[in-house]
Image (cartoon, rainbow, N blue to C red; front, side, top):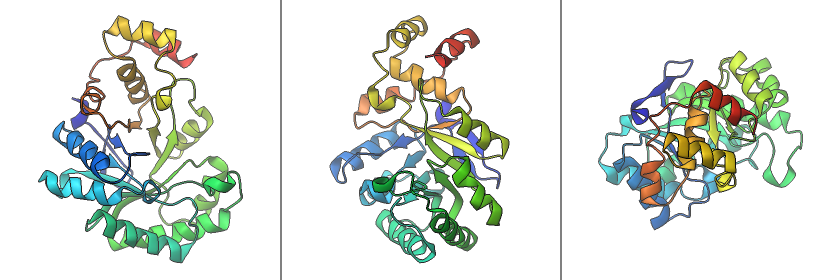
Length: 267
C-alpha cells in the first residue's frame, strides 16, 4: 500500500512516498481539517511552509491526531524572500515554534530567488542559508535538509561548498511539465525529487487522453496523474481540502503499463 511505502534518503532517513501538500490552504479550520483527515486516512507525510501561513494549524492537527510524532514526516521551508545565514536560523526557529514541534523532518530553501524577483542571482544568499541549514542539521533539530525549485545552476554553488549536499529537491512536476533536465541532474548526484502540483492545479484533469486512460484503468484522472509521478520514482504531495479527495488521492495502488507511460510522457 502506497501510504506505507518510503524512500530512504542518502543519510538513512525514510521519507514517505505520498504526502499531503498544503499550499494555498488557509490557516484555521481548513488547514487543520485537511491534515486531520489525511492522517486519519493513513497519510504520514505533511508538507507545509512558512510562506503558506498555516504552520500553526498543521502543527495543531498533528498534535491532536494522537499519532506518535516519530511516525509523521513533516516538511517546511525557508521563505524564498529570506536569504542568508542569520535569517535562515531565525526562520527555522520560528517555524519550529509555529508548528509546536521539537524537530522537523525536512527543511527546504523554498526557491533560489524571491518570488517577486524570479531569476535574480541569489547565489551568495543561498550559500549562506545553506551554512545555517548544515548547522541546524548537525544540531538534530532537523532530520534532513534540501532545496525547492532549484535548477543545476543553483545547485552547483552549494555542492562546491557544502559539508552535506541537499537530500531532496521539491519541484513542479506533472504530465506535460516534467522538467527533465532538473530531474536527470538530481538523479545523477543522488538528490531525491518531490513532485508538487502533480495535477497541475487541476489544469490537466480534463485532457482527453488522460480522461480516456483513466477510464481504461478504472481510476480518476487525479489518481492517474498521481500514479504517473510515483512511477517516475518521486515523492508526490497532492493537495486537497476535501476529505473524499484526500482519501481517493491515496488509492493509487495500480500500475500504469509501460506503453501508457510512454503516451503520457508525450503529452
